[in-house]
Image 1 (cartoon, helix red, strand yellow):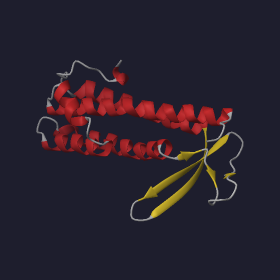
Image 2: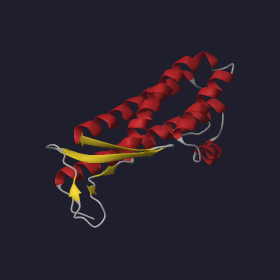
Image 3: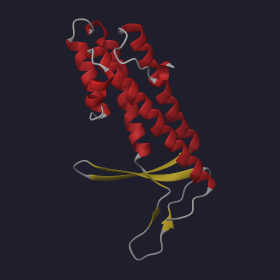
Image 4: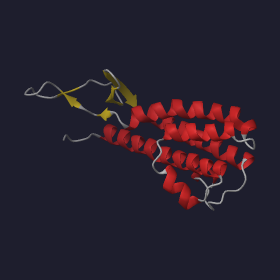
Length: 178
């Protein structure tokens, strides 16, 4: 492990903000599913706690399309889900990157990948059929922008639910509704 400088610490806090705000969005999506499917909070949590966000969005959209009571909402939900999927990829690249990484071949002195002033380097690793490494140089402001996008989308989902769906059996509200 290496000592982190103040710029890196600010980045880490911003990355934590992305993760935290995403959990609030996931909670709103879970609540949306419970309301669409008329499921109580306890049963809903038992089910949705095991569903990844992308699958959760697919389930919500499928229920809306296939339910006569909600089919008229499917187009609006589809637009929100597309935004959610694009934001999910940004979130994943941010939260799962290898940040402030020291690199170098085994046995050699590690080197820091150069980043510009105020930037920290992250490596986004993907391995879906082929290994891909992408180096990102990111600022705190850019990461904070992702958090703001998540907050705004969460609010849009909460407003959609409040406007279009009956009150939930859950007795809960999403963080965006409070």
